[in-house]
Length: 212
Image 1 (cartoon, rainbow, N blue to C red):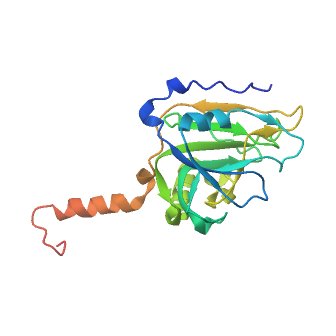
Image 2 (image 1 turned 60 degrees about the horizontal axis):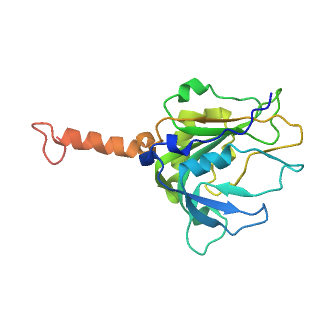
Image 3 (image 1 turned 180 degrees about the horizontal axis):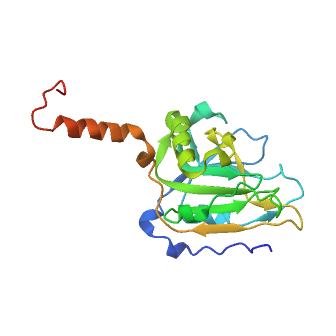
């Protein structure tokens, strides 16, 4: 059964967790000129829980959770930062949402979704953006925690574009918005942890500057 678009109560999203997120918009698959904007999470949720009916899968506007360097075009080397984690689950590889119960996210079915072969996209907002140069490494860590081998590896590309939710005439569709904590990327980065361990060990009695 199709679910109707979910009405988003923007007032229900705490103000401190509704900071603006960098988003790039594109008119079509042929558009390589990112239109950058800062959008609140509530506005993004509203857009990602509204399904459109379309005849063609590759027609319509696209978006990405990115900030592009000024004056640049669509390319991963031009991505200054990434503001959200977006994961695609295709071919029936649907995650156990109970494992995400503490996290804030929005999800929607994609164009070729069916009862026999569910296809979903989930988007998690970050507490702070991830620099584009660090994205491949960070994506590997986040994907390991939230998707693993079940996700589409193409999402690793910082410049990957996503169509807004759409379905063919009479097609199945669904959306979900779950409220919880925003993702702090640094919690999934080993570098700060290693640095904290080094600093803690340096403070132990009897250790010299050489760590001995």
